[in-house]
Amino acid sequence: MNTNTAGNNISKATTDAFTNIITTDGEAEPLIINAVPAYLLFAFGVGGNVIALVVLLVTAKTHKWKPFYRYVCGLAITDGGGLLISVPVSLSMYASELQRELSPVLCNFQMFWYMFTLMSSAMIVCGMSFDRFFATYYPFHYNKPHKEIRTNIIVVLIWGLSALISSLPFFGLGSSRKFYPGTWCFLNFIETTTEVNRINAIIYASIGVLIVLATWTFNIAVIVYFVYKRYKNESTWSGWKDAHVIIFLMTVVILFTSCWFPLMVNILGHASLALPETAGKTELLFTRLSITNSVVDPWLYIIFRKEIYYAIISGLRRLCPKEKEFQSDSATNPRAPQSLSSGNKTENVSIDTK
Image (cartoon, rainbow, N blue to C red; front, top):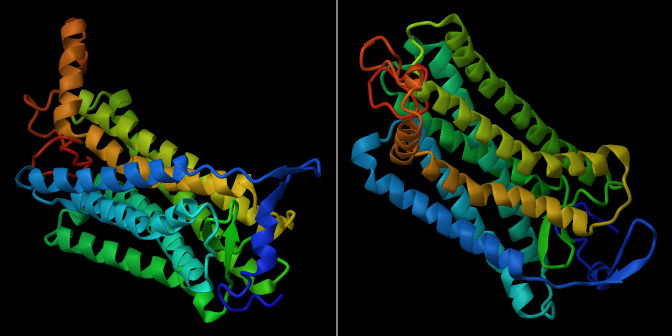
């Protein structure tokens, strides 16, 4: 079967293959059609990102569109827009109870948007991590004029690079493929006996793994910086505010890795280790997991806003009035850096999420 052109491997044989799915013990089990997860991902993904954009617009006078919020805006547009464009194709298939056939054009369309959305989202998260690393270790360079314009350029470049990577199958490097239960299409990393499919899968997954490693590196470096300040008892340690930075960064990197990494490992496994050419429930699970990152992201940034954070801290202080050492010393120390929630101009070691 020729797979040099994107989508030309969608055939009747491929469609019939989803009538049954082969398990690891060689036995076949009937196809189970469950549209609920797809509807939930669509509703919460699009809805959550729309809410995140509304919150950003409503609070614009407070955050003044600093770099962090520009990344959040780009992430919400990417995640919400990508899901809004790609998922309805699958929902229409579920609505027809798989009586409709995914045409090569629709398959290529959905493949591109899934690849683009997942890759762009991952790159923006990595860009946010680098932004915090740069602000922490090189504050004077970071705080040069026009840093907001620099952020806009980075987001646009991320979109452009993601679009280029995702469009490689249209230039003959790889192809699209329908996946179980026959309602969605993605990069063909299953039929890797075809060289172009294998190369494209390796390129996409390798970039994904590098993004994960870079994100961990940047965030760990920032966390080490804050922990070192606390250990040295430096006057620049700002108590609960810096603890907020650590909690936020660890939450972001753990969530991102848990959702994104399994799919990249699965793709590399098929491309490099010649795993069996089956596209079953495992691939569906890992892809839905990676999409879940796009669903949870906006809620994470909404939850970590300053108002909610300080409400929690105020409650803890009422319960534990003796824990004075955790109170921020920024009021008495003008040298204290801007924190996750601070609105000061010196944002050299913080994440702005107020």
